[in-house]
Image (cartoon, rainbow, N blue to C red; front, side):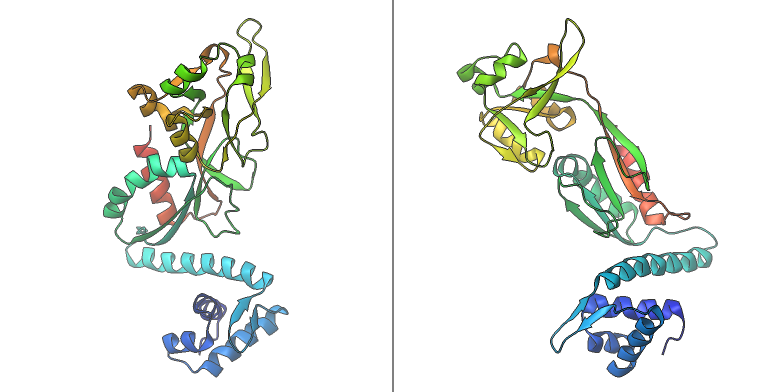
Length: 299
C-alpha cells in the first residue's frame, strides 16, 4: 500500500475520479478496505473530511474539491518531471489538456486548428469547452481559458493572441426594410440584438465625431443571447442590428452578408483576446505547447 503523500494523493484522486473505493481498489490491485483505510488516514492527517460516503455513492466535500484540484496538478507535475528526466531533460507535451474558449473564438480559431495540433502533439488529450461565460479557471479545472476584454484576475498569467475592434452590423435586407441608421439616436427605431452575459448589455458605446467625446447609447431589442454565433446568425437572417467583434464577422463583411453601420461613431474600443492560465514556476509542457501553437497560427 502506498505510504507516502504522493501515493495518498494518487489513490484519493483515483477514488474521486471513479466515485468508488471498489473500482479504485481493482485498478490499484488492492482491497477496498485498504483503499478506504488509506483515504481515512489522509483525512485524519488533514483533520477534515474529503469524501462523504453513503451506501450508494461518494461525494466530494468542498475541502475535497480543493484537495483534488491541487493533488491532480501536483501529480501531473511529478509525472511530467519524471518523463522529462527520462527523456534527457526535454519535456514531452502529453496528458489531458482542458481548454475553455468563447463560442465565437472557439469555432472560428480554435476548432480549425485542433487536427494539426493533435497531429503535432499526439500524446496530448484535448478537452475543449466552448462557452461565453467567464469561468473560474481553478474551480472549473481548466488549464487554459481564452478570454476577450480587460483581464481582472491579477493572479493569472496571460498571453495576447489577437486584438479586435467591435462593429455595429446589419444584413442588407434588414437595412432595406428598416432604413440605414445615420446617428446613434436613430437606434430608437431599430431592433438591437444584445448579449445577456454583459453587465452593460443594454448600452452600446460610441464616439462623437465632432468633439471626440465618448458616450453610451441605450439600445432596445427583442433578443438577448449568450454567445456570438447566435447573434451573428440572427443578424444575417435580418432580425436586427448587432454590435460584435470584427474578427467574428469579417468574412461576412467581405462577402456582403453583413454591412457595418455608424462607423463614423465607432469608438474604436480595441478588445484584446488572451490565453489565460494559472501561473506556476514550471509551466506544464502541454500548456506551453498549446499556447505557443495558437500564438503562431493566429494573426
